[in-house]
Length: 401
Ligand SMILES: *Cc1c(COP(=O)(O)O)cnc(C)c1O
Image (cartoon, rainbow, N blue to C red; front, top):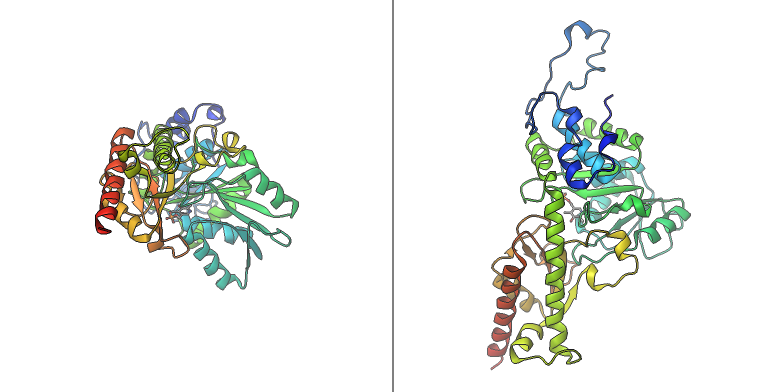
């Protein structure tokens, strides 16, 4: 076994780790890793019998492993401070966690709807897994599934509080940190036992790959997850794996910038909303009223003023937030009126996106829009919101005449 993690990089900055952490695993002198499409690898002829069909060979068949999977897991393990295993999607990664822990009673709170579907499927196969809310007692619970920041609002949960409650009940805590990858959050520092990321979001970051990552604290769970992955063929394809690896090299700059722009946009939109309802700090003009009076709610971690916020998010909150309007019609009007925010699902990529979650997830309010901030400039995105909100106000005013 080759060590995935090179301790030399453990204390370096994320941007350095993402470029160098897997270098000891490169088999050719390449600076940039190759895609590597082969499914099968030559046996070592002289060792084949002693070898038990390649048991001591690093690579035999790509369902079990291939160089670029090992390399990306090396980088991911270093940057997430754990032991990372890559899967074909975030939801496949979720299934692998359930198969590892085989829980009988799961506590789950606000979360991406797909995770709840995976849990239902798992329960149908494994037989009657009890599901309770994370806000209830954890008595008898063996697995707690916490999403923070929460999709679709971008609000955060106090991970260390849930970790203490879970551990007091003898349960394990899984944190879905898809909306705040490194350098925005490091849930092991707050006591999480396992971290899951949909790499289709920030880790991939360009809306062009599907993958998922499970990060365990120790190597034993990672080995078990790899066995499950090999048995069922749950891994990511070679192109996706390669795209993921090249995307990680820019993760730090992308995500830090996206989070900064998002925090400014949230502040701007919330200031529009408040100035339209209160004159406490500002006398609104007619134009200010147009901008703010149709905005009902803005939600994001930066507006929660949580005492644990800065410890949990040392480098900014996530770049996803939510806005709500008085009606579904108003929400859809704005989603269609925005120009630089593409009206499409998903999040975490370089393009800003706006999504009407109710369309796919009936538990999401029909008046809510989820916004994922990309790499466009703050000024251009702010202008986009100004035109869309003004157009909504004009539309609402004229349609009532
Ligand atoms: C998208 C998402 C997932 C599912 O990931 P896929 O890669 O689409 O399978 C899981 N959790 C959260 C929070 C997500 O946003």
